[in-house]
Image (cartoon, rainbow over the protein chains, first blue to last red):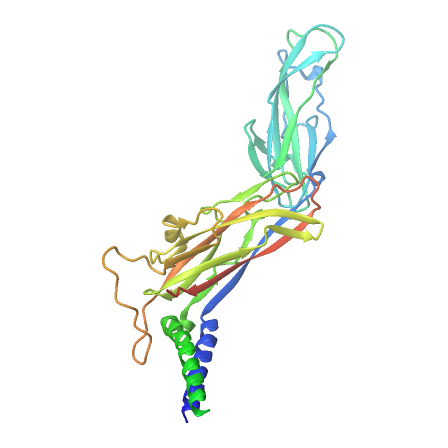
Length: 167
Length: 197
């Protein structure tokens, strides 16, 4: 009979240990990151900026980035719907490749997520956040203003540098 | 022989007595066993792309406690009991056995009885780096003398319950420069139990 009492005590202890195991709670949180290749974003020049001196008015030429067919066209190819940062230098010296002299070209840039120049929006020189379209592309149109009233004859070449990076 | 058996039984009983005393101490927790609930808010994930859409090789991404990308969990339990929270996780998230990214996880808790996570976050206490366990009451107690021992739930009485909040955040990287593109995943396990003193 006494033995049964001890056995009952053993059972009580066993039961307590079992219940202790039930009083804990756990949950898992998934840590995740999608890594992409650096090559997954690139900038392609589709058309260069054409400055036609015959269109000069009072020694000044203006190529509208939003409306002019002579505006340069660039395309960003990247990941669909990804946000990216863009910045560019708005004023660039272009150099007379046939002799002395430089000219200052004031760029203007418009951008849009589809190939629709008329609907594009102005992008100022400060860093700005943009979003690649669902077809993995984003377009830039580049125009500018240049004063050629005091320009020496020659052929002028320059570069337009634009930096893009994912956010 | 009968005398020897009696001694053995007494010895056994004494040895069990120690176990039963421990069981008695933890029995405060036993009453609350079913009412400690931990649940993630939202998707219950720590997605580093929520902080930085595009993650490239060589980059480091940090999700801070105050960022929307931080994972948030609620812990509902008895206000008169303390809880232990333990976090375990792999120190990398993996694409495959060859491609791994270092992961450092931190966590914070808020036990002011806030009704929303936004309010809770304003007073969250960050657990120092390197610590993986924290013990705190579900609701912070006022200073003064200790309160009486908690009353176990019984017929006609259920202890007051409130919600504490956990915030999980951390740093990913630096991502190896030659890391293969893809989805890297890992698990952060959060284990909660009532404290036993």
